[in-house]
Image 1 (cartoon, rainbow, N blue to C red):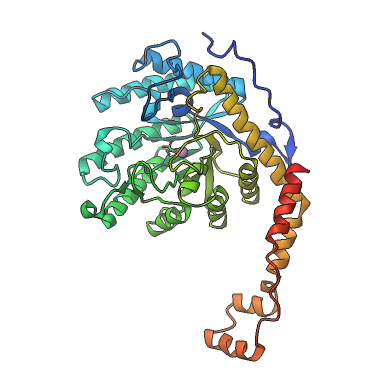
Image 2: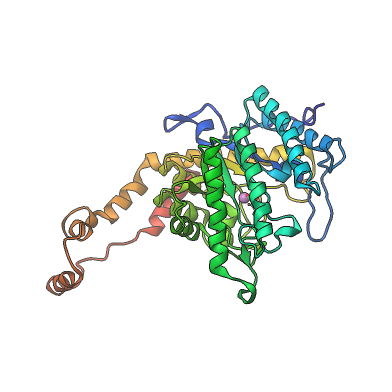
Length: 426
Ligand code: XUL
Ligand code: CO
């Protein structure tokens, strides 16, 4: 059965998989992935209304028949768009049963079906994860739960999700700590909770390596929603956490654009923090709405954002992961054609961002400006300070001798912004 046959193939305006940009085909710069949960699951429900789209794919939701129909529809969709990867939570794939063993048997069954599709199409898993936030047992966290039994259940889900990720040839494994946080410190042992999250991650690393998982683990930072305070607030916080608990060799970060803005940062800021710390792993490619205070998970459309994001990615030498469209159609965009259009928008936005970022780099004016701005640090006093030649007292003595700094060169922001506009719009 075909689901998308009647829908015209997307017409890409910028995404040309084989076009070479800075020595590499676009498709290698941009390993795009479909998010199983949104694309095959989200049907437009919100706090005030029920589904507007039909994601039954001809089967009864909550059945294994539906799980298989989603696989069929998902692989057909990815082939139609030319997407080579997918991302999943364990519970995106099958309905959860009362009994863990039954859920796991269902996962075993569906994973054989997915594996066969992978072999047939060449499509692979970008990353897997466990849904440790939906079920009521996680109302007070998973790794950070006050209950060891809940921790134990979370461990079981992580183990199974890792098994599946390895089976699907996944490049990475994600921890998004949706419920790893708190509402009030009155009932929270913050130190213990953080140690326990790290414990769960260490257990995952040990197990993953023991079954041959060679990819990266990722933390996906988010400051809030659903919890008021999430422990993995932003990139800097997550990197500090990983270093504190000795996880930084096995982990990198999965940066989501909308999470960045919820944390009061730009997407580029979060990517830059990762880049300068050697921790840039993967990207959840979406965009938020600055007028709304929650995670709207929109398809990327803003070319300034995708250009600055691709600038960071190019400067970092690429991703170990890829670009997962953790995004959903707007509620009134409720047709199958809208699904295709949304991915075409996202892929084109990143393709155009890639081209513009490459032009910014090739143009060289931004780089030259930076080099000149910081030139004082490459020789003379600057180089001596950096190499540790002076103590604080020696510098104080030197300052008295040299007097006021000789000049205050301009930061040049507006001129740099003019250059960006010139490259974006000609
Ligand atoms: C939630 C979110 C998740 C993660 C995976 O905001 O981004 O979908 O990407 O659990
Ligand atoms: Co995400």
